[in-house]
Amino acid sequence: MNDSKMITVTSPLLPDLKEFYNSLEKIWDSKWLTNNGSFHQRLEKALAEYLGVEYISLFTNGTLPLITALQALGLTKGEVITTPYSFVATTHSIWWNGLTPVFVDVDPNTGNIDPEKIEAAITEDTVAIMPVHVYGQPCDHERIEAIAKKHNLKVIYDAAHAFGVCKNGESVLKWGDISTLSFHATKVYGTIEGGAIVCRSREMKTKIDNLRNFGIVDEVSVAYPGINGKMDEARAAFGLLNLKQVDAAISKRKQVAERYRKELTGVDGVTFLQEETNIRYNYGYFPIFVNEEKYGISRDALYVKLKENNILGRRYFYPLISTFEPYRTYFSAAPSNLPIATKMAEEVLCLPIHHALSNEEVSRIVDIVRKIK
Image (cartoon, rainbow, N blue to C red; front, side, top):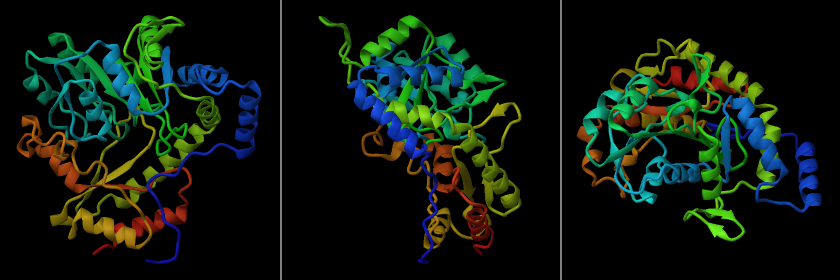
């Protein structure tokens, strides 16, 4: 391995250190470190304005919003139809609520849950659908929600990858009953760790806010068996500063993505997801798919070759959630039920894409992928 620095898939978006120190001093002087302090309140308001939504509730990480969303909708038993092609927190949230995940296959053009497969998986025990906007690619929400309405099902969108994503000028966070976000450091927008729920009414926001605070309603009342999911003031301050620069970061990511598309188009055995003109993307990821027969070597071999050159790609999402120990025995987890998701998981490799990636680094990555043979 050479001595150059490791090029990673993501690079944290970091605010100006002096500004962050100033914020920490204000928090320290206020003696209000958590529990819906001023920075927390300001960040909720700022994010609602930026994202074009009315009701948003902050959380300390991106997993607790998924768990809490199911609780907020009163889903305590039954089946939830979801995708195996996601980060494992998606399915864990279903399990933690005592619900049963039911996996269906994905659309090869987007990696998102395939609406054609959803209806066939519905049983008398189905209570909800939990799709994922994979890589920030919007789901086919019109078909998903038509199915949900027909069968009286709730829809919870895992929008961990979809910060700022819009379709036809509308935020994807407005779809379904609830959407959840992740503000992990590897995301386009981060609060170190963090997350949020976007809901549709003041009443639901109040319930969610209570659930993230142990279910406490007032000094003497606990209405729900909630959890401690509150975001502290330091993370909220970090998030406010990051919000100032997220547009510039997305613009830089877009430039990297456009270069990848231009220079990798026509490489035999390498494909990538196509963009649609009516969607505003956030360029959080740039997955390529490596067909071993056409490309000449496997995805894993390319992953190793890049790593040998200090370039850390990510096989994201691999393995499928449905292959992990807690879920592999489910009937719906059988590979024969998930052929497209299985193929994508075996071929995917996310190339580095972030705001700090230099032109020289992009050139080095492209050269290795193009000249691997």
